Amino acid sequence: MHWFKTVLVDNYANFSGRARRQEYWMYVLFWILIVILLSAISSFSEEYLGNDWASMTIGLFMLATLIPWLAVNVRRLHDTGKSGGYIFINLIPIVGRIWYLVLMCSAGDYGSNQYGPDPKNPEIHDEIDDIGRTPTSY
Image (tube, rainbow, N blue to C red):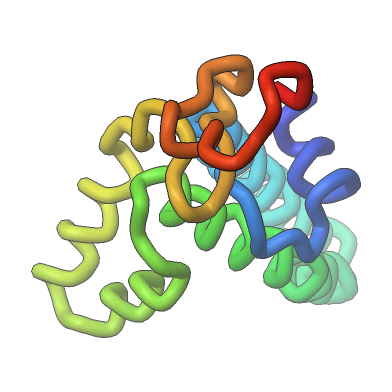
C-alpha cells in the first residue's frame, strides 16, 4: 500500500524522474485490487440493493487515477532509458502491447541516465556526472 500512496500522493502528476519496477508493479497490483473490490461492491449493490451508484464509483476512481497512472508509466519508461512517448506503443495491436509489457518488466538502467539518478541505487553516480564539479560538491 506504501507504493500506491507514494504514486498517488507524493508523485501525483510527476512526469519527470524515474520509477523502479517495484514502484510500478505494486501500484498496478493495488490499482487492480481496488477495481476488483469496487466491481464486487457494485455488483452486490445492483443485484441486492437495486442501487447503481456504485458503478459510478469505478468510473470516478479510474478518472481520479488516470494522471498518476500516466505519470508512473512515463517514469517507468524513463528508468529503462526510453522517452515517455513510448507509451503510445500500446496503440500497435498485439505486438505493441507485448513490447510495452517487456519494457515494463525489464530492469532499469544502472546508474544515472538522462532522466535522473538511479532510484534503486541513488548513491551511485557516473563519472561523467562529476565533470565540472569540485570534489566537495559530490
